[in-house]
Image 1: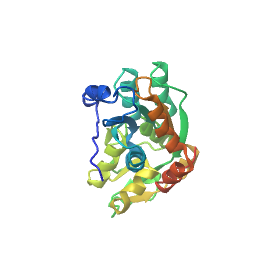
Image 2: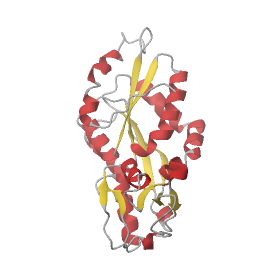
Image 3: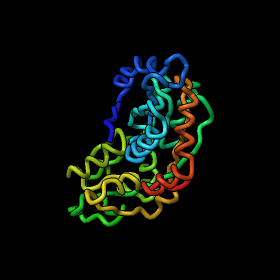
Length: 255
């Protein structure tokens, strides 16, 4: 698989500024030179979007897809501040609204998938957690309040009457998962898709009312894109029957 550049902060994203100029090769859509499509995406989309990138590059000669994965809130704020990028994918509507309010989106956002939250433990489940009610007295983690995975976790914590406090608040769902897989936490709130991707590295504990509090994912082209048509082609691919099938295989539900 072709090596991809993963950008995880605004400072790193700004390093891409010279690349924006590379995308404009006399208005010929990238022919005669490589072209970059920069996608800012919620970290929970990492695996499936990398698969999309392989398909996209195969169908677009001379185009390379680069990603900035991170928390939806951070990415939307970067887009609002004018950071280079062509497509924004967030794990909730509130984050996408940040970009919209700053006139950073190139068109109306579309909903392309939904996800639900689960608890994960290490494979041997040392704390014996079998439901969300067992979190008291254990070391558990979740995302921070200001990011989508934190807001969903908070809703489930409140609806289930959990009174204990998390050992830490993580910047995104990937960081939350790593706390569990590394053995630093007895349990963590992550999306079902992240639990599927982790495979045998975790044990999944379902949350009874999680289906009542799903999170929706939004896609939009960015106003600062060097090639809005190419960015729209990425969105069209994700929304296609084949794209929706790939998302379903990764554990996402239809919008």
